Image (cartoon, rainbow, N blue to C red; front, side):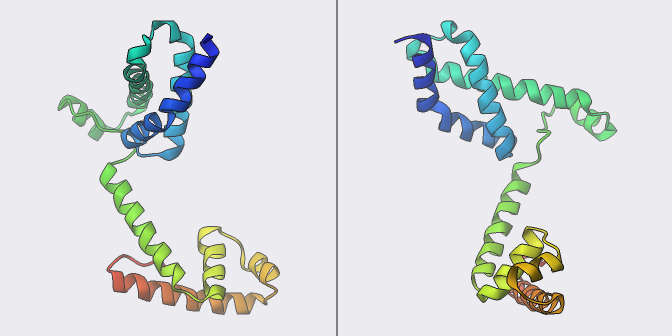
Length: 175
């Protein structure tokens, strides 16, 4: 097996677990994908250093180093006095947000999705196009063959219904 086949096999075997590890570290899907890419770029350069029986551990070490290198770069860019206080206390704070915040946002998103599924199709369509996809009233009207006034009425009713459903769930609502 040549060097390229080795790397390809390692990628297929470990890419997902490395992605999930990096995602848990940084809390951002796009960054985790970028870090996985960078991990395998480093792995390509240093593949001769890895022993086949320890390849997984070696790849995770490379992934950790990629994450820490980025974390250090972000750390250097910060000039916030509160951040300096954290450094003096020797706490390592991720520059990509707090896991609790990410978890709450994901939970809120699931509740919103559930609320949207309960809407009539026309309300759901208008709501998604305006609130999530940021279409203009004119664009929505053209797309759905409605007047702008009809779009505004449907959106108002959809928002009211969504807010009621979210209030039932005890989550903050959108205005």
